[in-house]
Length: 479
Image (cartoon, rainbow, N blue to C red; front, side):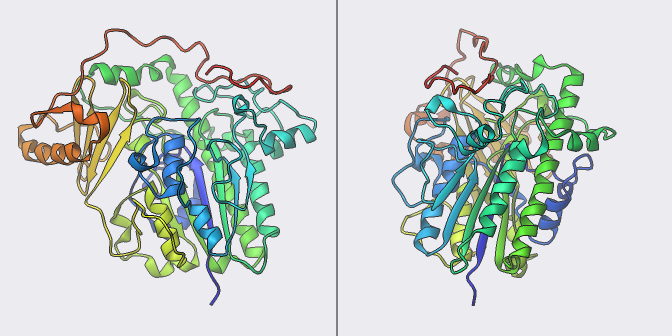
């Protein structure tokens, strides 16, 4: 029997609900909808730390932030000394290749892959020029990557400024297809395709932006939460955009999603033309989501559904036997991807993992999420029905019934009818805290920590604005 191939497609910042198969009428995702309808779409998948680097460490190690070491965004932290997802497949005889974003340190660390075709969004401050920027130089476009003028964490938008083949999504897709064509025919393939979008900058190709010209976006989600100090901090960035700028950003963001959806068709086409499709597990996921102005917030680093809920789809012919057997309802998180794929492909792992194999009898009763160690630190407990979000600064709790209020518009934290639920969820949260976080609980009661007296300073770097990249910028410049 042939060994299964794996194509793991990971996007950056794609919310778990932003798909046609999740009921959205305003986004065009026909390819991914097909994979979900004919595969296993995990309905309750979460990023245990919804920001790029910690989430990707969980993906590549099968560990939670407590054990892989990062719950902040430590861009100069090396990977832990353990067997990785790619390393396990390599040890099992697979040809392992990654194309796109890795977000590890040092940047050329292959984390167990045989080869990495790198696209790092121009992070020259670490002293590395990635393969995409090298390619741009070879095309006579050295340093042109960011001349669209849009920032990497802002929600202003404009169409892509160069030709279609030069767009990062097009380049990653083309390089992934090359790896399928040049694979070793005597070895099974593990291919990791890591798209940098729809994460800002929001610069879609005009052809995909045009598809949204007459689309009416679904209304942003509102709520009735008290606006505590910490909530005001998270809403500050979104408040800077006008209603038109918000609408433009949402349409352009979805256009970037549709570009990726169309690109996946090309990858599937390459698998088919090279006689790999019938034996390949296709996985689609994201590292975290984006609030996209729901609850008057943008970006990630939050445990509301827009930011923390992620797409996770296992599809392809090898997955047909797992469809409609109840696996879709399991609580799962990013660290589960590694043990699941190893189990599906009968690959041994030398490490003890925090994740579980999702197509086994194993299940978890709840998920613990954690992000940050500063004034915006946030923790989460999500069980089969309820979600508790905790902000230690101000000792603020939000409780949501995920069956009745998946859009999180009404917090039940202060509702006397849910006192027993609050007690249970607080108990799970207290038992999950580690390190200095345990100081937030005194004599069995949550006390948190006081609200800071000083306000945050303006970001004069315009939230990671880029300039020309030729000649390459100096290393170590400020953020």
